[in-house]
Amino acid sequence: MLANRMAKKKEPKEEATDGVLATVAKTIGAAAGTLATAVGATAPEKPATPPKPKVPKLVKKNKSRLPRRQKKAAGKTSKLA
Image 1 (tube, rainbow, N blue to C red):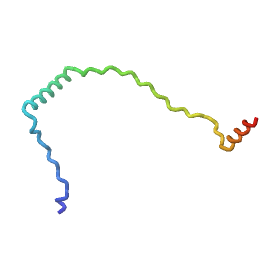
Image 2 (image 1 turned 135 degrees about the horizontal axis):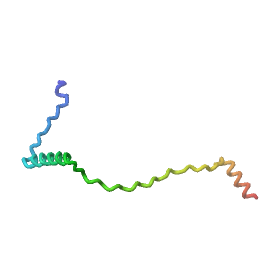
Image 3 (image 1 turned 45 degrees about the vertical axis):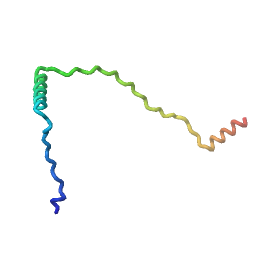
Image 4 (image 1 turned 120 degrees about the horizontal axis):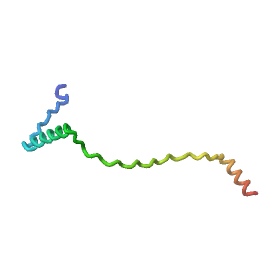
């Protein structure tokens, strides 16, 4: 009963869709790659991109903040004067 619940192992699928020409092309490509590395050929290098400008972080303001009552009182005294 437990054997039925166990996961089945996946069998590797054989690549039957690959034809003879595809297999030959893969082997020729692999041989050409090893030959090119033995000779010392390298892939063309990409041009260097200019560095991106850094965006500065927001600076915290060092304002002195008054409590609400003091603020109202200051506003009233400025209106009276």
